[in-house]
Length: 555
Ligand code: F6P
Image (tube, rainbow, N blue to C red; front, side):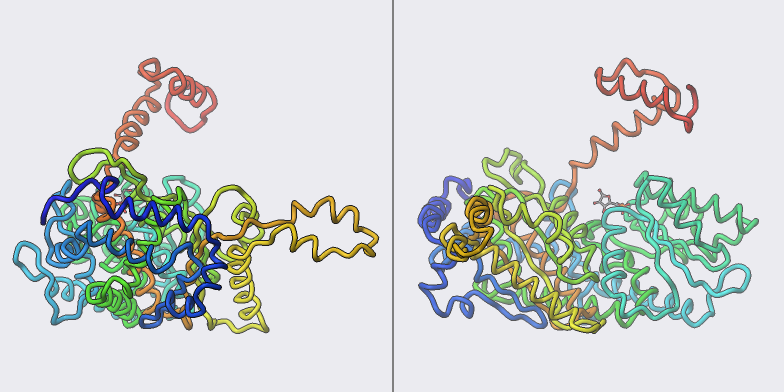
Protein backbone atom coordinates (compact mmCIF):
# COMPACT_ATOMS: atom_id res chain seq x y z
CA UNK A 1 0.00 0.00 0.00
CA UNK A 2 1.56 3.29 -1.04
CA UNK A 3 2.23 5.97 1.59
CA UNK A 4 -0.63 8.44 1.76
CA UNK A 5 -0.39 12.21 2.15
CA UNK A 6 -1.58 13.50 5.53
CA UNK A 7 -5.34 13.66 5.32
CA UNK A 8 -5.63 17.37 5.94
CA UNK A 9 -3.07 18.15 3.23
CA UNK A 10 -4.65 16.04 0.52
CA UNK A 11 -6.32 17.53 -2.53
CA UNK A 12 -9.53 15.70 -1.80
CA UNK A 13 -9.66 17.19 1.73
CA UNK A 14 -9.34 20.66 0.21
CA UNK A 15 -12.03 19.83 -2.30
CA UNK A 16 -14.33 18.78 0.52
CA UNK A 17 -13.65 22.03 2.36
CA UNK A 18 -14.69 23.86 -0.79
CA UNK A 19 -17.89 21.78 -0.95
CA UNK A 20 -18.59 22.71 2.65
CA UNK A 21 -18.21 26.43 1.84
CA UNK A 22 -20.49 26.01 -1.15
CA UNK A 23 -23.12 23.99 0.70
CA UNK A 24 -23.07 26.32 3.70
CA UNK A 25 -25.05 28.73 1.52
CA UNK A 26 -27.66 26.14 0.54
CA UNK A 27 -30.37 24.85 2.80
CA UNK A 28 -31.31 21.15 2.70
CA UNK A 29 -34.77 22.25 1.56
CA UNK A 30 -33.22 23.96 -1.45
CA UNK A 31 -31.37 20.76 -2.29
CA UNK A 32 -34.74 19.04 -2.48
CA UNK A 33 -36.06 21.83 -4.72
CA UNK A 34 -33.07 21.49 -7.02
CA UNK A 35 -33.49 17.73 -7.39
CA UNK A 36 -36.96 16.20 -7.43
CA UNK A 37 -35.35 12.73 -7.37
CA UNK A 38 -33.31 13.50 -4.28
CA UNK A 39 -35.11 11.07 -1.98
CA UNK A 40 -34.67 8.20 -4.46
CA UNK A 41 -31.05 9.16 -5.11
CA UNK A 42 -30.13 9.42 -1.44
CA UNK A 43 -31.89 6.40 -0.01
CA UNK A 44 -30.87 2.77 -0.03
CA UNK A 45 -32.58 -0.50 0.81
CA UNK A 46 -30.48 -3.48 1.78
CA UNK A 47 -32.14 -6.62 3.09
CA UNK A 48 -34.55 -5.44 5.74
CA UNK A 49 -32.93 -2.06 6.29
CA UNK A 50 -34.11 1.06 4.50
CA UNK A 51 -31.99 4.17 4.99
CA UNK A 52 -32.89 7.69 3.98
CA UNK A 53 -29.81 9.93 3.69
CA UNK A 54 -31.60 12.68 1.79
CA UNK A 55 -32.06 15.02 4.77
CA UNK A 56 -28.34 15.78 4.82
CA UNK A 57 -26.31 18.82 3.79
CA UNK A 58 -24.91 16.86 0.92
CA UNK A 59 -25.21 16.72 -2.83
CA UNK A 60 -23.81 14.42 -5.50
CA UNK A 61 -20.51 16.29 -6.08
CA UNK A 62 -19.75 16.40 -2.34
CA UNK A 63 -20.64 12.73 -1.93
CA UNK A 64 -18.41 11.85 -4.87
CA UNK A 65 -15.50 13.55 -3.15
CA UNK A 66 -16.27 11.85 0.15
CA UNK A 67 -16.06 8.58 -1.73
CA UNK A 68 -12.81 9.80 -3.26
CA UNK A 69 -11.59 10.47 0.29
CA UNK A 70 -12.28 6.84 1.20
CA UNK A 71 -10.32 5.75 -1.87
CA UNK A 72 -7.50 8.16 -0.99
CA UNK A 73 -7.32 6.47 2.42
CA UNK A 74 -7.02 3.05 0.74
CA UNK A 75 -10.28 1.83 2.20
CA UNK A 76 -10.55 -1.06 -0.29
CA UNK A 77 -7.08 -2.35 0.67
CA UNK A 78 -7.78 -1.97 4.41
CA UNK A 79 -11.10 -3.76 4.03
CA UNK A 80 -9.25 -6.60 2.36
CA UNK A 81 -6.74 -6.66 5.23
CA UNK A 82 -9.61 -6.81 7.71
CA UNK A 83 -11.23 -9.66 5.76
CA UNK A 84 -7.94 -11.53 5.41
CA UNK A 85 -7.11 -11.48 9.12
CA UNK A 86 -4.08 -9.16 8.99
CA UNK A 87 -3.15 -7.85 12.44
CA UNK A 88 -4.74 -4.46 11.79
CA UNK A 89 -5.05 -3.97 15.56
CA UNK A 90 -1.32 -3.24 15.43
CA UNK A 91 -0.86 -2.00 19.00
CA UNK A 92 -2.11 -5.32 20.35
CA UNK A 93 -0.70 -7.30 17.40
CA UNK A 94 -4.08 -8.89 16.66
CA UNK A 95 -6.33 -9.42 13.69
CA UNK A 96 -9.91 -8.19 13.92
CA UNK A 97 -12.25 -10.97 12.97
CA UNK A 98 -15.61 -10.62 14.69
CA UNK A 99 -17.12 -11.32 11.22
CA UNK A 100 -15.79 -14.88 11.54
CA UNK A 101 -18.14 -15.38 14.49
CA UNK A 102 -21.13 -15.08 12.17
CA UNK A 103 -19.63 -16.75 9.11
CA UNK A 104 -21.45 -19.62 7.43
CA UNK A 105 -19.89 -23.07 8.08
CA UNK A 106 -18.34 -23.32 4.61
CA UNK A 107 -16.64 -19.92 4.70
CA UNK A 108 -13.02 -19.22 5.52
CA UNK A 109 -11.61 -16.60 7.88
CA UNK A 110 -7.96 -17.19 8.64
CA UNK A 111 -5.69 -16.33 11.51
CA UNK A 112 -2.02 -17.12 10.82
CA UNK A 113 -3.10 -19.33 7.94
CA UNK A 114 -5.58 -21.33 10.07
CA UNK A 115 -9.27 -21.21 9.17
CA UNK A 116 -11.04 -20.33 12.44
CA UNK A 117 -14.60 -20.86 11.21
CA UNK A 118 -14.71 -24.55 12.26
CA UNK A 119 -13.65 -23.58 15.84
CA UNK A 120 -16.32 -20.91 15.87
CA UNK A 121 -18.99 -23.40 14.88
CA UNK A 122 -17.73 -25.93 17.40
CA UNK A 123 -18.20 -23.31 20.10
CA UNK A 124 -21.64 -22.42 18.76
CA UNK A 125 -22.55 -26.10 18.91
CA UNK A 126 -21.32 -26.25 22.50
CA UNK A 127 -23.54 -23.28 23.30
CA UNK A 128 -26.48 -24.91 21.51
CA UNK A 129 -26.05 -28.12 23.49
CA UNK A 130 -25.89 -26.17 26.75
CA UNK A 131 -29.02 -24.18 25.88
CA UNK A 132 -30.84 -27.37 24.91
CA UNK A 133 -29.86 -29.15 28.13
CA UNK A 134 -30.95 -26.22 30.23
CA UNK A 135 -34.21 -25.66 28.38
CA UNK A 136 -35.11 -29.35 28.43
CA UNK A 137 -34.54 -29.53 32.18
CA UNK A 138 -31.69 -32.01 31.87
CA UNK A 139 -29.40 -29.44 33.38
CA UNK A 140 -30.86 -28.42 36.72
CA UNK A 141 -29.81 -26.64 39.87
CA UNK A 142 -28.24 -28.44 42.83
CA UNK A 143 -31.59 -29.22 44.44
CA UNK A 144 -33.08 -30.61 41.25
CA UNK A 145 -35.15 -27.54 40.46
CA UNK A 146 -35.05 -26.04 36.98
CA UNK A 147 -32.82 -23.06 36.28
CA UNK A 148 -35.04 -20.11 35.50
CA UNK A 149 -32.83 -17.08 36.19
CA UNK A 150 -29.62 -16.22 34.40
CA UNK A 151 -27.38 -13.48 35.80
CA UNK A 152 -24.76 -12.22 33.35
CA UNK A 153 -21.86 -10.62 35.22
CA UNK A 154 -19.68 -8.58 32.85
CA UNK A 155 -18.96 -5.01 31.81
CA UNK A 156 -18.48 -3.03 28.60
CA UNK A 157 -18.71 -5.36 25.63
CA UNK A 158 -19.29 -8.31 27.94
CA UNK A 159 -22.47 -6.65 29.13
CA UNK A 160 -23.81 -4.09 26.67
CA UNK A 161 -24.20 -6.42 23.67
CA UNK A 162 -26.07 -9.26 25.40
CA UNK A 163 -28.04 -6.77 27.49
CA UNK A 164 -29.13 -4.88 24.37
CA UNK A 165 -29.96 -8.05 22.45
CA UNK A 166 -32.03 -9.65 25.19
CA UNK A 167 -34.02 -6.46 25.75
CA UNK A 168 -34.48 -5.75 22.02
CA UNK A 169 -35.66 -9.30 21.40
CA UNK A 170 -38.15 -9.30 24.26
CA UNK A 171 -40.92 -10.68 21.99
CA UNK A 172 -38.72 -13.73 21.29
CA UNK A 173 -38.14 -14.79 24.89
CA UNK A 174 -38.91 -18.49 25.14
CA UNK A 175 -39.94 -18.25 28.78
CA UNK A 176 -37.39 -20.77 30.00
CA UNK A 177 -35.24 -18.21 31.77
CA UNK A 178 -35.32 -14.58 32.77
CA UNK A 179 -32.04 -12.71 32.09
CA UNK A 180 -30.45 -10.25 34.53
CA UNK A 181 -27.35 -8.13 34.03
CA UNK A 182 -24.92 -6.97 36.65
CA UNK A 183 -22.14 -4.78 35.36
CA UNK A 184 -21.51 -1.98 37.79
CA UNK A 185 -19.04 -2.14 40.63
CA UNK A 186 -21.65 -0.36 42.68
CA UNK A 187 -22.86 -2.93 45.21
CA UNK A 188 -26.42 -1.71 44.81
CA UNK A 189 -26.86 -3.34 41.41
CA UNK A 190 -25.65 -6.70 42.67
CA UNK A 191 -27.59 -6.49 45.94
CA UNK A 192 -30.83 -5.58 44.20
CA UNK A 193 -30.40 -8.38 41.67
CA UNK A 194 -29.57 -11.02 44.27
CA UNK A 195 -32.56 -9.92 46.30
CA UNK A 196 -34.76 -11.58 43.66
CA UNK A 197 -32.62 -14.65 43.05
CA UNK A 198 -33.09 -18.11 44.43
CA UNK A 199 -29.75 -19.95 44.50
CA UNK A 200 -31.46 -23.21 43.58
CA UNK A 201 -32.72 -21.81 40.27
CA UNK A 202 -30.06 -19.28 39.27
CA UNK A 203 -27.23 -19.62 36.79
CA UNK A 204 -24.39 -17.09 36.90
CA UNK A 205 -22.48 -16.36 33.71
CA UNK A 206 -19.12 -14.71 34.34
CA UNK A 207 -18.49 -12.94 31.05
CA UNK A 208 -15.03 -11.52 30.66
CA UNK A 209 -12.84 -11.87 27.63
CA UNK A 210 -9.69 -11.18 29.64
CA UNK A 211 -10.90 -12.54 32.98
CA UNK A 212 -8.83 -9.80 34.58
CA UNK A 213 -11.40 -7.01 34.67
CA UNK A 214 -11.57 -5.78 38.24
CA UNK A 215 -15.28 -5.00 38.27
CA UNK A 216 -16.33 -8.35 36.86
CA UNK A 217 -14.04 -10.43 39.05
CA UNK A 218 -15.07 -8.61 42.19
CA UNK A 219 -18.76 -9.00 41.37
CA UNK A 220 -18.21 -12.66 40.50
CA UNK A 221 -16.61 -13.22 43.91
CA UNK A 222 -19.56 -11.49 45.57
CA UNK A 223 -21.97 -13.74 43.67
CA UNK A 224 -19.96 -16.81 44.59
CA UNK A 225 -19.87 -15.86 48.29
CA UNK A 226 -23.61 -15.22 48.25
CA UNK A 227 -24.23 -18.52 46.48
CA UNK A 228 -22.11 -20.61 48.85
CA UNK A 229 -23.66 -18.95 51.86
CA UNK A 230 -27.15 -19.77 50.55
CA UNK A 231 -26.48 -23.20 49.03
CA UNK A 232 -24.23 -24.34 51.86
CA UNK A 233 -21.82 -26.40 49.78
CA UNK A 234 -19.13 -25.04 47.41
CA UNK A 235 -19.45 -28.25 45.38
CA UNK A 236 -22.74 -26.91 43.99
CA UNK A 237 -20.89 -24.14 42.14
CA UNK A 238 -20.34 -26.48 39.19
CA UNK A 239 -24.05 -26.45 38.36
CA UNK A 240 -24.54 -22.72 38.83
CA UNK A 241 -21.48 -20.91 37.45
CA UNK A 242 -20.22 -20.83 33.89
CA UNK A 243 -17.68 -18.51 32.34
CA UNK A 244 -17.03 -17.00 28.93
CA UNK A 245 -13.44 -16.03 28.33
CA UNK A 246 -10.42 -16.25 26.07
CA UNK A 247 -8.44 -16.82 29.27
CA UNK A 248 -9.60 -20.35 30.15
CA UNK A 249 -6.89 -20.86 32.80
CA UNK A 250 -7.93 -17.77 34.73
CA UNK A 251 -11.58 -18.83 34.60
CA UNK A 252 -10.61 -22.22 35.98
CA UNK A 253 -8.49 -20.59 38.68
CA UNK A 254 -11.65 -18.80 39.74
CA UNK A 255 -13.27 -22.20 40.23
CA UNK A 256 -15.22 -22.73 37.03
CA UNK A 257 -15.02 -26.26 35.64
CA UNK A 258 -13.28 -26.51 32.26
CA UNK A 259 -16.41 -27.84 30.55
CA UNK A 260 -18.28 -24.81 31.82
CA UNK A 261 -15.91 -22.33 30.20
CA UNK A 262 -17.10 -21.11 26.84
CA UNK A 263 -14.26 -19.92 24.68
CA UNK A 264 -13.72 -16.74 22.79
CA UNK A 265 -10.62 -15.59 20.97
CA UNK A 266 -8.20 -12.71 21.26
CA UNK A 267 -9.04 -11.69 17.68
CA UNK A 268 -12.48 -10.60 18.93
CA UNK A 269 -12.57 -7.14 20.49
CA UNK A 270 -14.67 -6.82 23.64
CA UNK A 271 -17.09 -4.35 22.07
CA UNK A 272 -17.44 -6.64 19.03
CA UNK A 273 -18.07 -9.80 21.03
CA UNK A 274 -21.85 -10.12 21.16
CA UNK A 275 -21.59 -12.67 18.33
CA UNK A 276 -19.33 -14.97 20.33
CA UNK A 277 -20.28 -17.08 23.33
CA UNK A 278 -20.63 -13.71 25.11
CA UNK A 279 -24.11 -14.07 23.61
CA UNK A 280 -24.85 -17.10 25.81
CA UNK A 281 -27.36 -15.17 27.93
CA UNK A 282 -29.09 -14.14 24.68
CA UNK A 283 -29.26 -17.72 23.41
CA UNK A 284 -30.61 -18.92 26.76
CA UNK A 285 -33.27 -16.22 26.67
CA UNK A 286 -34.45 -16.29 23.05
CA UNK A 287 -33.32 -19.78 22.06
CA UNK A 288 -30.37 -20.84 19.97
CA UNK A 289 -32.30 -20.62 16.69
CA UNK A 290 -32.97 -16.96 17.25
CA UNK A 291 -29.37 -16.37 18.29
CA UNK A 292 -28.27 -17.96 15.01
CA UNK A 293 -30.70 -15.67 13.17
CA UNK A 294 -29.06 -12.69 14.86
CA UNK A 295 -25.71 -13.95 13.54
CA UNK A 296 -27.22 -14.49 10.10
CA UNK A 297 -28.46 -10.89 9.94
CA UNK A 298 -25.01 -9.60 10.86
CA UNK A 299 -23.42 -11.95 8.34
CA UNK A 300 -25.69 -10.61 5.60
CA UNK A 301 -24.47 -7.11 6.44
CA UNK A 302 -20.85 -8.35 6.22
CA UNK A 303 -21.58 -9.73 2.76
CA UNK A 304 -23.10 -6.42 1.74
CA UNK A 305 -20.18 -4.45 3.18
CA UNK A 306 -17.48 -6.56 1.56
CA UNK A 307 -19.20 -6.83 -1.78
CA UNK A 308 -20.90 -3.53 -2.57
CA UNK A 309 -19.52 -0.47 -4.33
CA UNK A 310 -19.10 2.48 -2.00
CA UNK A 311 -21.90 4.55 -3.57
CA UNK A 312 -24.47 1.97 -2.40
CA UNK A 313 -22.63 0.55 0.60
CA UNK A 314 -24.61 1.34 3.75
CA UNK A 315 -21.78 1.29 6.31
CA UNK A 316 -19.57 3.33 3.98
CA UNK A 317 -22.29 5.91 3.37
CA UNK A 318 -23.06 6.16 7.09
CA UNK A 319 -19.35 6.55 7.83
CA UNK A 320 -18.88 9.24 5.17
CA UNK A 321 -21.83 11.24 6.51
CA UNK A 322 -20.23 11.09 9.95
CA UNK A 323 -16.85 12.22 8.59
CA UNK A 324 -18.55 15.00 6.66
CA UNK A 325 -20.12 16.51 9.77
CA UNK A 326 -17.25 15.82 12.15
CA UNK A 327 -14.45 17.14 9.99
CA UNK A 328 -16.08 19.68 7.71
CA UNK A 329 -18.99 21.09 9.72
CA UNK A 330 -17.41 21.01 13.21
CA UNK A 331 -20.15 18.80 14.66
CA UNK A 332 -18.65 17.18 17.72
CA UNK A 333 -21.55 14.95 18.66
CA UNK A 334 -24.12 12.73 17.05
CA UNK A 335 -27.39 11.48 18.51
CA UNK A 336 -28.90 8.01 18.21
CA UNK A 337 -32.67 8.25 18.49
CA UNK A 338 -34.48 4.91 18.34
CA UNK A 339 -38.25 5.27 18.09
CA UNK A 340 -38.74 1.81 19.57
CA UNK A 341 -38.64 1.06 23.28
CA UNK A 342 -37.21 -2.37 22.53
CA UNK A 343 -34.09 -0.57 21.33
CA UNK A 344 -33.75 1.61 24.41
CA UNK A 345 -30.23 0.33 25.08
CA UNK A 346 -29.01 0.99 21.55
CA UNK A 347 -27.57 4.44 22.33
CA UNK A 348 -25.51 2.96 25.21
CA UNK A 349 -24.30 0.10 23.05
CA UNK A 350 -23.33 2.35 20.15
CA UNK A 351 -21.68 4.76 22.55
CA UNK A 352 -19.15 2.11 23.57
CA UNK A 353 -18.80 0.77 20.04
CA UNK A 354 -18.05 4.19 18.60
CA UNK A 355 -16.38 6.12 21.40
CA UNK A 356 -14.12 3.32 22.64
CA UNK A 357 -13.18 2.56 19.04
CA UNK A 358 -12.62 6.00 17.59
CA UNK A 359 -12.17 8.32 20.57
CA UNK A 360 -8.44 8.60 19.82
CA UNK A 361 -5.88 11.12 18.55
CA UNK A 362 -2.75 9.12 17.88
CA UNK A 363 -2.59 7.92 14.31
CA UNK A 364 -1.33 4.55 13.13
CA UNK A 365 2.08 6.07 12.49
CA UNK A 366 2.35 7.36 16.07
CA UNK A 367 1.82 11.04 15.18
CA UNK A 368 -1.02 13.14 16.55
CA UNK A 369 -3.96 13.70 14.19
CA UNK A 370 -4.44 17.31 13.14
CA UNK A 371 -8.15 16.78 12.68
CA UNK A 372 -11.07 15.63 14.80
CA UNK A 373 -11.81 11.94 15.15
CA UNK A 374 -14.72 10.05 16.76
CA UNK A 375 -17.67 12.16 17.94
CA UNK A 376 -19.54 12.09 21.22
CA UNK A 377 -22.34 9.55 20.78
CA UNK A 378 -25.43 9.91 22.88
CA UNK A 379 -29.16 9.44 22.61
CA UNK A 380 -32.42 8.20 23.98
CA UNK A 381 -35.62 6.70 22.69
CA UNK A 382 -38.28 8.81 21.04
CA UNK A 383 -40.69 10.07 22.02
CA UNK A 384 -39.06 10.41 25.49
CA UNK A 385 -36.18 12.47 24.11
CA UNK A 386 -38.65 14.95 22.63
CA UNK A 387 -39.54 16.01 26.15
CA UNK A 388 -35.97 16.24 27.31
CA UNK A 389 -33.25 17.37 24.90
CA UNK A 390 -35.00 17.97 21.57
CA UNK A 391 -35.33 21.62 22.61
CA UNK A 392 -31.53 21.73 22.28
CA UNK A 393 -31.57 19.95 18.91
CA UNK A 394 -34.04 22.46 17.51
CA UNK A 395 -33.03 25.78 19.02
CA UNK A 396 -29.49 25.72 20.40
CA UNK A 397 -26.62 27.08 18.33
CA UNK A 398 -25.04 23.61 18.15
CA UNK A 399 -25.80 21.34 15.21
CA UNK A 400 -26.16 17.68 16.18
CA UNK A 401 -26.64 15.29 13.25
CA UNK A 402 -29.00 12.52 14.29
CA UNK A 403 -29.83 8.95 13.34
CA UNK A 404 -33.52 8.17 13.67
CA UNK A 405 -34.15 4.43 13.89
CA UNK A 406 -37.57 2.81 13.86
CA UNK A 407 -39.41 -0.37 13.15
CA UNK A 408 -42.55 0.26 11.13
CA UNK A 409 -44.50 -2.64 12.56
CA UNK A 410 -44.63 -3.48 16.20
CA UNK A 411 -44.86 -6.72 18.15
CA UNK A 412 -47.25 -4.88 20.46
CA UNK A 413 -50.08 -3.43 18.35
CA UNK A 414 -52.00 -1.40 20.87
CA UNK A 415 -54.61 1.05 19.56
CA UNK A 416 -52.84 3.62 17.34
CA UNK A 417 -49.65 3.78 19.38
CA UNK A 418 -47.48 2.74 16.47
CA UNK A 419 -48.74 5.24 13.89
CA UNK A 420 -48.64 8.00 16.51
CA UNK A 421 -45.06 7.12 17.34
CA UNK A 422 -44.06 7.01 13.68
CA UNK A 423 -45.75 10.36 13.01
CA UNK A 424 -43.67 11.82 15.80
CA UNK A 425 -40.45 10.51 14.32
CA UNK A 426 -41.23 11.89 10.88
CA UNK A 427 -42.44 15.16 12.37
CA UNK A 428 -39.13 15.56 14.19
CA UNK A 429 -36.98 14.82 11.16
CA UNK A 430 -39.10 17.22 9.14
CA UNK A 431 -38.96 19.94 11.80
CA UNK A 432 -35.20 19.55 12.19
CA UNK A 433 -34.75 19.97 8.48
CA UNK A 434 -37.36 22.62 7.71
CA UNK A 435 -37.22 24.74 10.82
CA UNK A 436 -39.48 27.80 10.92
CA UNK A 437 -38.42 31.36 10.17
CA UNK A 438 -39.83 34.58 11.59
CA UNK A 439 -42.04 35.27 8.57
CA UNK A 440 -43.71 31.87 8.94
CA UNK A 441 -44.39 32.57 12.62
CA UNK A 442 -45.78 36.04 11.89
CA UNK A 443 -47.88 34.73 9.04
CA UNK A 444 -49.62 32.47 11.49
CA UNK A 445 -50.70 35.38 13.70
CA UNK A 446 -54.06 37.08 13.43
CA UNK A 447 -54.48 40.75 14.50
CA UNK A 448 -57.97 39.86 15.70
CA UNK A 449 -56.53 37.43 18.22
CA UNK A 450 -56.96 39.00 21.70
CA UNK A 451 -53.44 37.74 22.51
CA UNK A 452 -51.96 39.21 19.29
CA UNK A 453 -49.54 41.62 21.01
CA UNK A 454 -48.03 38.98 23.24
CA UNK A 455 -47.84 36.55 20.33
CA UNK A 456 -45.93 39.16 18.33
CA UNK A 457 -43.61 39.70 21.26
CA UNK A 458 -42.71 36.04 21.54
CA UNK A 459 -42.56 35.37 17.79
CA UNK A 460 -38.75 35.17 17.73
CA UNK A 461 -38.79 32.50 20.41
CA UNK A 462 -40.95 30.41 18.15
CA UNK A 463 -38.49 30.30 15.28
CA UNK A 464 -36.51 27.16 14.54
CA UNK A 465 -33.10 27.12 12.90
CA UNK A 466 -33.81 24.07 10.71
CA UNK A 467 -31.27 22.66 8.26
CA UNK A 468 -30.34 20.04 10.86
CA UNK A 469 -29.22 16.84 9.17
CA UNK A 470 -30.56 13.38 9.91
CA UNK A 471 -30.42 9.82 8.65
CA UNK A 472 -33.53 7.71 9.05
CA UNK A 473 -33.15 3.94 9.33
CA UNK A 474 -36.37 1.97 8.96
CA UNK A 475 -36.97 -1.71 9.46
CA UNK A 476 -40.17 -3.72 9.11
CA UNK A 477 -40.65 -5.45 12.46
CA UNK A 478 -37.70 -5.81 14.82
CA UNK A 479 -36.40 -9.37 14.42
CA UNK A 480 -33.17 -11.16 15.38
CA UNK A 481 -32.03 -10.91 11.72
CA UNK A 482 -32.52 -7.19 11.26
CA UNK A 483 -31.15 -6.42 14.73
CA UNK A 484 -28.00 -8.32 13.72
CA UNK A 485 -27.82 -6.38 10.47
CA UNK A 486 -28.33 -3.05 12.25
CA UNK A 487 -25.52 -3.67 14.74
CA UNK A 488 -23.13 -4.93 12.04
CA UNK A 489 -23.95 -1.81 10.01
CA UNK A 490 -22.65 0.38 12.82
CA UNK A 491 -19.63 -1.88 13.42
CA UNK A 492 -18.50 -1.47 9.82
CA UNK A 493 -19.29 2.23 9.90
CA UNK A 494 -16.90 2.61 12.82
CA UNK A 495 -14.24 0.59 10.97
CA UNK A 496 -14.50 2.79 7.86
CA UNK A 497 -14.20 5.97 9.89
CA UNK A 498 -11.16 4.61 11.75
CA UNK A 499 -9.47 3.89 8.43
CA UNK A 500 -10.17 7.38 7.12
CA UNK A 501 -8.91 8.96 10.34
CA UNK A 502 -5.90 6.65 10.21
CA UNK A 503 -6.39 5.43 13.79
CA UNK A 504 -6.60 1.95 15.26
CA UNK A 505 -10.28 1.44 16.14
CA UNK A 506 -9.60 -1.82 17.93
CA UNK A 507 -7.48 -1.00 20.96
CA UNK A 508 -8.55 0.96 24.07
CA UNK A 509 -5.47 2.30 25.83
CA UNK A 510 -7.52 5.18 27.17
CA UNK A 511 -9.07 2.98 29.83
CA UNK A 512 -5.73 1.95 31.35
CA UNK A 513 -4.62 4.96 33.40
CA UNK A 514 -7.83 5.08 35.42
CA UNK A 515 -7.49 1.36 36.19
CA UNK A 516 -3.92 1.79 37.43
CA UNK A 517 -4.79 4.77 39.60
CA UNK A 518 -7.88 3.04 41.00
CA UNK A 519 -5.78 0.09 42.15
CA UNK A 520 -3.42 2.43 43.98
CA UNK A 521 -6.23 4.53 45.44
CA UNK A 522 -8.03 1.46 46.72
CA UNK A 523 -4.87 0.51 48.62
CA UNK A 524 -4.51 4.03 50.03
CA UNK A 525 -8.18 4.15 50.98
CA UNK A 526 -8.14 0.82 52.75
CA UNK A 527 -5.07 1.71 54.80
CA UNK A 528 -5.53 5.45 55.06
CA UNK A 529 -1.95 5.86 53.92
CA UNK A 530 0.00 7.93 51.39
CA UNK A 531 -2.83 10.45 51.16
CA UNK A 532 -0.40 13.36 50.94
CA UNK A 533 1.35 11.83 47.95
CA UNK A 534 -1.62 12.73 45.80
CA UNK A 535 -2.38 16.15 44.37
CA UNK A 536 -4.16 18.50 46.82
CA UNK A 537 -7.62 17.92 45.34
CA UNK A 538 -7.28 14.13 45.34
CA UNK A 539 -5.81 14.14 48.85
CA UNK A 540 -8.64 16.39 50.04
CA UNK A 541 -11.27 14.09 48.56
CA UNK A 542 -9.62 11.05 50.14
CA UNK A 543 -9.51 12.74 53.53
CA UNK A 544 -13.18 13.66 53.22
CA UNK A 545 -14.08 10.10 52.22
CA UNK A 546 -12.13 8.80 55.16
CA UNK A 547 -13.89 11.17 57.54
CA UNK A 548 -17.38 10.25 56.34
CA UNK A 549 -17.10 6.61 55.23
CA UNK A 550 -18.65 3.93 57.39
CA UNK A 551 -17.63 1.14 55.04
CA UNK A 552 -13.89 1.10 55.18
CA UNK A 553 -10.94 0.09 57.35
CA UNK A 554 -9.47 2.96 59.37
CA UNK A 555 -11.44 6.09 60.28
O1 F6P B 1 -13.37 -0.87 28.86
C1 F6P B 1 -12.30 -1.66 28.50
C2 F6P B 1 -12.71 -3.04 28.14
O2 F6P B 1 -11.57 -3.77 27.82
C3 F6P B 1 -13.73 -3.13 27.00
O3 F6P B 1 -13.17 -3.00 25.75
C4 F6P B 1 -14.34 -4.45 27.27
O4 F6P B 1 -15.54 -4.61 26.59
C5 F6P B 1 -14.51 -4.39 28.77
O5 F6P B 1 -13.36 -3.69 29.23
C6 F6P B 1 -14.63 -5.71 29.46
O6 F6P B 1 -13.50 -6.50 29.25
P1 F6P B 1 -13.49 -8.03 29.60
O7 F6P B 1 -14.51 -8.72 28.75
O8 F6P B 1 -12.11 -8.50 29.30
O9 F6P B 1 -13.84 -8.18 31.05
